[in-house]
Amino acid sequence: MKNIILVILMSVLLVGCSIGEKKLRIFKLEEPRQNLDLPKPTPLQLEELRWIIITSDNAVEVFTKMEEQGLDPVIFGLSDKDFQLLAKNFARIRNQLKHMNDLVDKYKEYYEPKKDDKKGE
Amino acid sequence: MFGSLKIAMVAILITGIGAAGMYVMKLRSDNAILKVNQIKLESAVADQKQLIENQQKDFQEILEANNKMNQLLTVLKKDLDDLDKRFNKKGRDIGKYAIEKPKVIERIINKGSIAATRCVEIAGGAPLTEQEKTATKKSEINRECPSIANPNYVPYQE
Image (tube, rainbow over the protein chains, first blue to last red):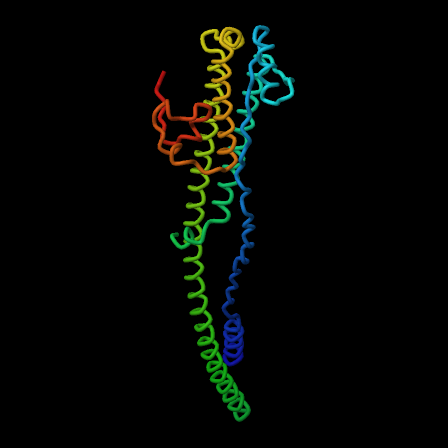
């Protein structure tokens, strides 16, 4: 009887030892995407334009001067109020342009840091 | 009877010894695996630490970028408000001024137009000139957009 119990115990002991250690599996991060690296557009170089102020008093003088300068005596006009609106619109477009341009710079700086910056980290 | 019992005992003993040997072998193999696991775990912990550090650095960068963008928006809005003030300060009417002094206003408008054009160039990414960078006086600045054209100019408090 003792032997039978011993055999059973030994079998249990041996079977218990057959459960081995689990091997760890570590997943590595995938290689990040390549940088887009698109070049920035060439900065704008705008043409200089000249404003002419016409009043009911100086209209004839202005048109005569324009003719003397070889320009067609015609004016594409704006009232003083519309001129203010144009100036403000221009300023808003400029602000938007600056905002977008800086956003692109920040994104590029963040997602595509220069190699020197990476070394410094 | 006793003979067969002896054989059984011997068989069990041999099996036991064999099993013990195998068990020791398995223990050694497990030990080797555990050592490898330990190395992997240590490396994973180091990776995690690096990852957390990088995340903190990224978070800091995001915060700074947000602050800078907010600052930019504030100064751009101030430039726009200043433009509005220039047109309407103390009930100013540039239409009336233009009727009275068309030549003077024409000169001022053209000067402002050149400055505003330069502002668009800068906003589009054109680099600042040395003169723009070093301007600190009101007479030296681009009055249309000092916030982006003259980084060293500190406006007076009015």
